[in-house]
Image 1 (cartoon, helix red, strand yellow):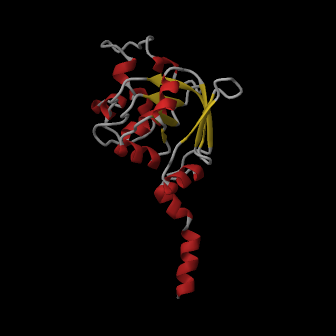
Image 2: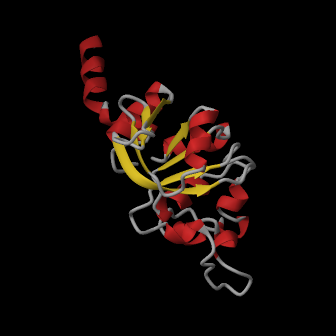
Length: 197
């Protein structure tokens, strides 16, 4: 699978400060009836975005999403906990997010996100708190240097570093999943096989 390569992302943030946002809140189980990635953005955070009658809620920060201006989600700690479901990063991507920032992101969610083109960024608590307290701030994530910057040019300018597993980082920069990376090496693999006779 291929997706848009990710080297640097600059966007305003949407902040969901709640802790322990699990995968069933990201995409409720009743929407897991498809293996198609497109269209799942409609189900992202469905129970937070719609009332019991299916009417959109205007009192949620998620009302700003999907406009191409808010591609970074800042979430409370232990984001993506709960059951493993690839539908969760699919839904977030289809909803318009390219990155999630938190002080703690569940390992299974993190792995699923990285394989599907969504960048999970884990930052220190101080940086996380600053981002939680400034919803809508413009943030730049540089995957090459593995840095997060915000408040650039102001007295409150801030920078933090984060780590991404090197192979996953390479795949995100190239815009491919792990299988796509291997397929891109087909020529080199064939040349190696031919050389070995």
